[in-house]
Length: 264
Image (tube, rainbow, N blue to C red; front, side):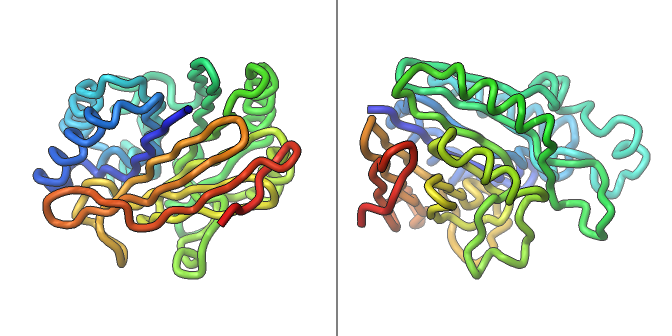
């Protein structure tokens, strides 16, 4: 059985200490196969915030697949945003543009950067995915071991509920979903600070709420616990309840051919 702890939107600089410590204790006890961190590790992309995020992740005993979000680029510091947008990220987490891969028995997880320093629309927090990135993801997934759970981690959502629709789905999402259906099993994201899962075609998409920050968008802090084997996949949305996390909602899926269908 593969287990994944999916956390997101940590926003160090706006973290809540009690919730940060509670999440760390819970993840250490859970001991998942992988911790997936879907972006916005910092609030203002300052060096102290990146240091705090790196120190937090170093305390995990499990491998972590970490991708950047739009808050991991300087915001109103226009000079830094245009000339050195990835300085803090490179210092602590390496090349932000490289497609990452973590492979474990039964698991192939790919991380991709959908955050952009600028855009043609007024909201530069929105993300995009390039055809070149998709080609790299496809190549990595095709080299996954037979029967492995194939996971893609990004910051921006590829599937939005009605309550999250106003935040904007990642640019070129239709192309991405068309190309990844039947090749990937699960896509993980954040950005909207809401926890949910659903199907985009035959692909399971799960979004995590903000795991430890005070920047709530209509629901408590949370993260996702994911359990999967060759024929089944379960996403538990965990929520903070004052002194710990508890399961709020669970959705189950079963494999059908090369994809997934709802099992509940």
